[in-house]
Image 1 (cartoon, rainbow, N blue to C red):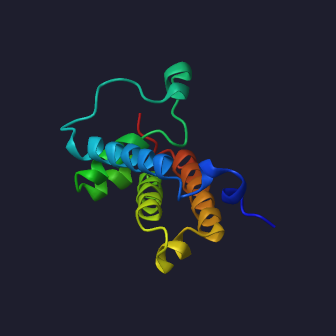
Image 2 (spheres, rainbow, N blue to C red):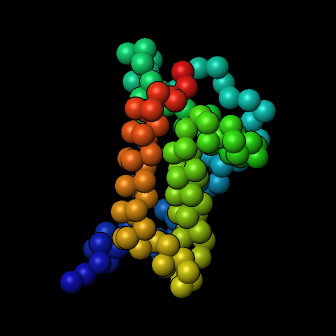
Length: 135
């Protein structure tokens, strides 16, 4: 059975242009979080902007910004999902930069994706229903 990357070149890590573009986008996002002295004072969550109520992922942008600035406790307080998103971004960057590494092939497996998605959902809803969501 052919792999999805065999039938769709855009999914292949070996597609040079798309790989370089994805590396630039991820590196740019990480650089923005690391280099911005503060976050812009604009509403980033469309759900919260429309309803006036926070969603399970509210605070993730602030969590990532604090994580990039070494404020680990503040990052965790805003939203623990920030750690999962940061890991997913760094993992994808590693896969793109070192596609033939054994360790990278292990962390890029289907099981890791399932675990990350489960953690994302569980932590998001626990954070939301515990009442600790920041507005």
